Length: 249
Image (cartoon, rainbow, N blue to C red):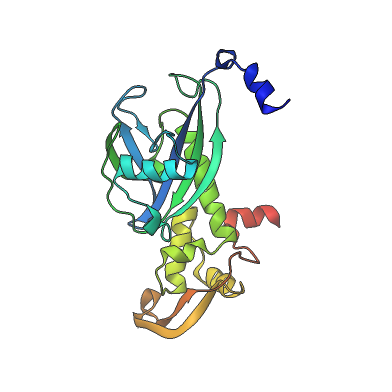
């Protein structure tokens, strides 16, 4: 059927109304803990409940809607100039009937992951916005508990197969500082010696700067070597989480 024939027989009343939203799982590391950005909803439905930042899509792409919601509802400004420090990727689409009591709503969820994100400022339909350690982010509005769980798993998996963690350790870092990033995101304590050996065994993951720290390393030991991110885009072999290592053996 050509377009003209289709339009001639098209009646929008034959199709149910569906709205499209974006929801954003924004993660950062604050005070050594993996934290997620939450808003307190100021309007119905779920007024007074905590939720992920998000909103309805306008005449814009989904990516631009996700960036706009980060700016409008949280005070963050990840515009074109900030994309280098904000890792943004589409996570999953959620469209179960009844997920929003207002109408049929399909949401494209995004994962935003960046170091040193500032204190948020609520806007739009949010009464408050704040960073919360991920283990304290529970009983969220809509189906945001499910979305957050999926976002956390995606972020944790990204650190297994990509060098994303180096972006959180600064331009130069010790292996111990890199290990602290992994421990915060994975929520697991990591054996220092094993982690050091695994990192250096991955080609292109990190490279030595030839310098050392000004002070002694962990536990007052000798000065630690400094590294920078290498040129690898994927980690091979992957740095599997300790719990996942046990499953693949």
